[in-house]
Image (tube, rainbow, N blue to C red):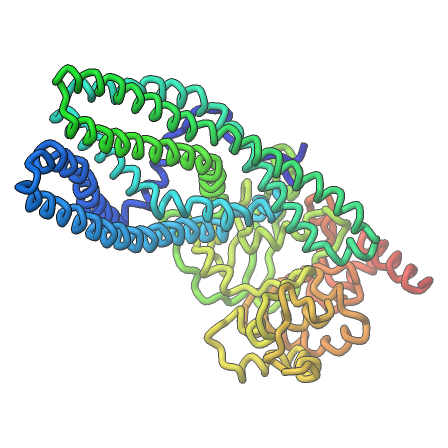
Length: 598
């Protein structure tokens, strides 16, 4: 099953064992906040000392103060005051620790999310083409959010619990080694139970994370395509599909939880059995004079505190196992290779004049499926090059390679004599204007979208760009002019209006190389005539590459190249190619005849 489908489960590492490498990688995000973590841990150590002193104070009260009668009252008052002060101090310490860890945990979450988002910005188009966007979104939002509790409290609490176990064990050994051995008798049973549960638990949570990803993908896809859904009255069918996906997520979650919840009652039962054994042996030894009543009461306090951290650690282990499946997918995205990036010692591309040269360029999206085959051509600054030909011939590939959205398999591309493979991507793309058929507008105002290409531009410059491409008139007819909100993807505007804004956006960037990939396909004939003058001004003095299926729009291009089977079959101006009566002539006359019939 293809992974570019909402109900396709993602297959990651095949191991079902607890993989510590993901926690080590997470540690890189934790390390910058080591000082805050150590301070919070220090507070918890002090809190543990206060807590562990209380059973010992009870022992003194029972064994020393109470038997003295009235003479023991001063000691009882002192011990009670110490207990009260310790309790109040504990409350303050725990509150302060919680504040520190909440802030630190959220800082770590922010850093991890930033690292993932920044990496996603650099990934190639193929990454987004090969998986539903909902499955990408769930990594940035849901999966990282799921780590919040573990990072905000779990790390420090678990480290403190481990330290408390050693301190409690030391206190119990100092009081009575025999009772200590009885109190620790349940640990082998707990370790055996944890080993039996962990593999099934990890597998169950990995399945759930898959189903949650599928659910998020279907929701995203359904929202994006809601207009199509309503147009074809598919609501009921989609509801059934969503019900199946949601039920799959629910059932996998319930199964994972049923396994996870085995750990806590197992630890709780073992602790009760161990405490019962401690009372049985303790009572017998107390009758034999080996153990005092105060020691037995103190042990009851310590064993409760001993199994408390054990239960906490068991719960934290559950949290880690749950989050391991999320960490896998987060780091899987972070490990996706950036196929096109700046080479070592990449240089800044100088201010472009517009000379472009392809030299024996060969490219394939997949091994063995060559799209461009040994393509060579050059154009001078200011030339307009039109690329025509059948679908899949390689036209869009040429402009994608020029923009370095992909790297060549072999050959070279030069701009003003500089090989673009050795320049920084930012210096290359910032000097190019690219307008695609599917014009994307961001949520915000019309002004925001025009200035997206050059945020530092003034409003006056943006308005002048809009006037140049004949967008000003329609913009001013909207409710708030340039401050009109366009909504996500520009849903409030027509396709033609969105493309006019994209023209203004490109003009404002003042690129020396301009690419129009079917950029006028959604503009009606009347609007096309209206903006032709603006486009002439937009193209003036710029090297431009124009892909168009409507051949009437590229008749005035400096040169027309007919692309087919990954090669340049014909090249020349419109009149030359028409006189040649080759492939371009057949394409043009066929389209003209079709329009005449229409």
